[in-house]
Image 1 (cartoon, one colour):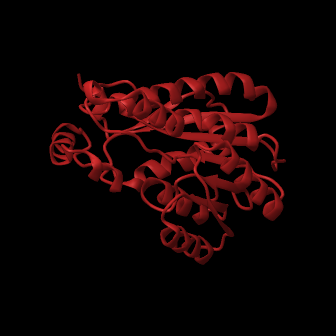
Image 2 (tube, rainbow, N blue to C red):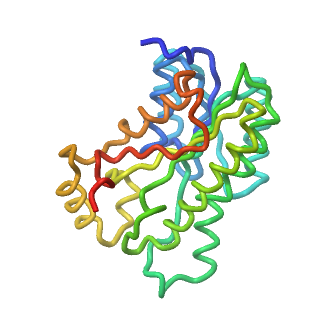
Image 3 (tube, rainbow, N blue to C red):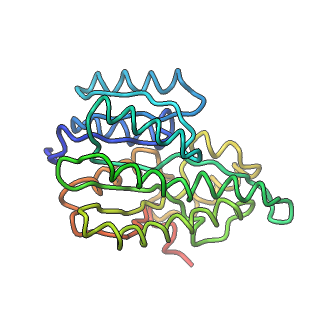
Length: 252
């Protein structure tokens, strides 16, 4: 299948593992050069970069905390120096404090909000400074916690809701400049991030039981939708949040 992505250049934040890694490798399958962003797991980032190159695309490994604007500027400077421009930005890096609301401090809340929502702003501001090969695409990775209540998810859910709102406003402002901005909201995916949930087993069991498709998502399911949004076939999708959850959210 030719999605006409060959030769495009992408940055996928938080892409040394999990959903971000699946997105990076899926883009590389279509010969997109991919910059891998990581914060702590350099070995995993370098392994992902080797896999990208084995698939016939170029890679770039960039350490940086997306919640720190100086780190973001440094990463984009490296991309500009190495590649000259950027066509695709996937904002996937996420973190957050998983506690009951009554146990959250404002520090917890701001930390979660800065990484999951606020980081999109400097990422996009730096993106539009780099010349593209045609239109530019932004995809932010969200979750169902943006619109549904999940135990221990208060701070993260609020940050994802803010992220989806920012996607709509950025889409409105940037569409006339040839920048398409959307989000993908993922259902339950059993990744390393889920190990931090104190009720992980219950979450997985409940998701399996009530998902009409009959199975949990895997990272590739999310990556497939992200790749689609990066293609010209999605050229008239602006400011939307596409839900990929096997039908979980259609149940009351």
